[in-house]
Length: 245
Ligand code: ADP
Ligand code: MG
Image (cartoon, rainbow, N blue to C red):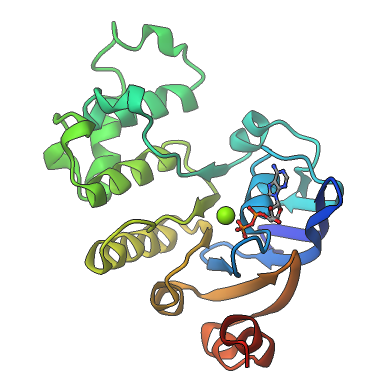
């Protein structure tokens, strides 16, 4: 059975069909890229899966459980994680404190107490930071980190809830090619180690073709192609959308 099964998913804003009845599946251990031109409906699709937007139609099953109609928090509890940008308020926290916050929150503890219990979850947080290659920088404030390192910390935070499915909307935006490749290689390693699934959007076709196991292509809210990278590269509809030929 697939981990995620999306059927007839749709969302309109006023008269605009941002997502117009799409179907796709995602399996454990798989990196699925969602690509398409600006305005294709990628972010809208993401936000329906994580519950920030309510679908107008269709179904999103995670391990057979319907996500449509659930609150973001409930969806997160069921095992759908997402990378959040480290907000300014958290930039003054150290690297390890940021991950401790995420662990506390995943463990149903009140995080108003977290400062008092400064060592709480520290070992587990360091363990997650080690997985993303950031253990050595654990006690530095996030505000002083290089951009690529911030992205690693964001990934460690997302892993705190041990998600079955991780959603990443443009994870490598603003990164240099070397950092991009490092982040995607790390993501791929985590996917394999934890047998989780990742759904990500990405502008760089180099990154998509190098790291995605499968791809789905949206254009104007419709799914126009899906398949392995080499199939997508040769797909006439994709050529048309991307190269106007
Ligand atoms: P992508 O992420 O692929 O660039 P989006 O999902 O953000 O595309 O947007 C798809 C379409 O839906 C676009 O036409 C966009 O203008 C429209 N749209 C997205 N969000 C909203 C919103 N909150 N209100 C109105 N229109 C929206
Ligand atoms: Mg978007």
